[in-house]
Length: 447
Ligand code: PLP
Image 1 (tube, rainbow, N blue to C red):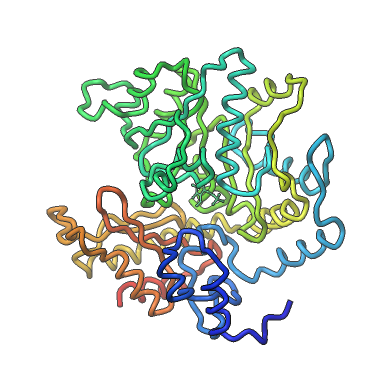
Image 2 (tube, helix red, strand yellow):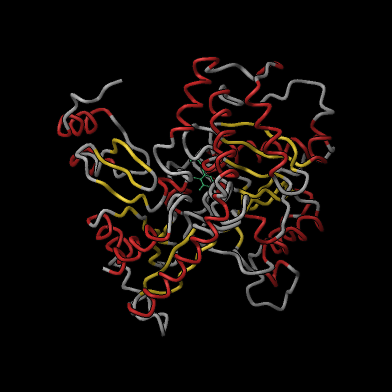
């Protein structure tokens, strides 16, 4: 395909007329056209159709972990497409890249998460995790265990079950269609999850919901190890461990949504490893292929797989693109490069550089506060008066203004505003970033 005859203005007109964009204000888009039309990228940089160069400070949608223009990923995709672009995984058919990737994932995943159900992305992975949880309990003779508990401000995707588990109101409430059996607990209450009923926050914690609904009605708890779109919220020490223990105590499955955290983003291969927790099911997508192919999956621990493989009828779930050979070949190469080039170690090192930059900004700017970084999943907040904790007036959104000013200075970031009216700016650059490039981002923020 050659787009060289395309003129920016022509593209804008076509876009306005024919392209309904996700997570975009339709009216503004139809009137004003795209904010920017990407054309190419290299490393942490992207260029638009006018040749303007930007730092991709969010790895697009927290997914382009190896950066843009990675030729080895392009080459392996071409090679696999030329050989066998697609084949079915239904009805017992298989293909080599899907099998090799399954083995690789088993070797990488914590504990005994040794098998995978492939999907094409994060929402499909979470829907799959819910369905497999319920199916598992049905096979165990506990078909009444159907409810799912998530936590507030979670983002798990937009298919109807994932949307229901998503708690960010903007997404949760869109279009009105939801399933009924999902509950949202107040997050990150370690003592409460350990059973401390004297804690004034006990009501509404996961344990409280389990006690009220009855453990025999609950299939699974789903949690992002570090909450991404909800505001880059890092759990306190002991929280994920407490939820793991709680799930074991009550016989509830623990689903880790590693769609953002997985594959190095948090400075470990998987987010849960920061807290030494092994989930029962783990949803992955995004970083599995650095966004070069549309792939997701649910990793499944042995004791669950043992039950599933006793089923002697059709497991009536699966997507056309489950086990897509090209997508899997790209993911295998992506993981090979992650390991070969020690990208996870680089992520950890760059976390320290980013933290140093945050300290500098904190010293210099009185509104800058609450910075955090787990690997290169990072963010900070803006307060009118950080010492007293006084937020900005809710009619202004300084985080959006900061992001807009950075955009003018050719740095792409994202503003997140949580339901408590906080002004959060998210930073999650490609994991191949170097110290100079971190400094460049900090300098733009400083400005
Ligand atoms: N889970 C998490 C934690 C996510 O951040 C996302 C997307 O941002 C999803 C699930 C949904 O993934 P997808 O957009 O690939 O369906």
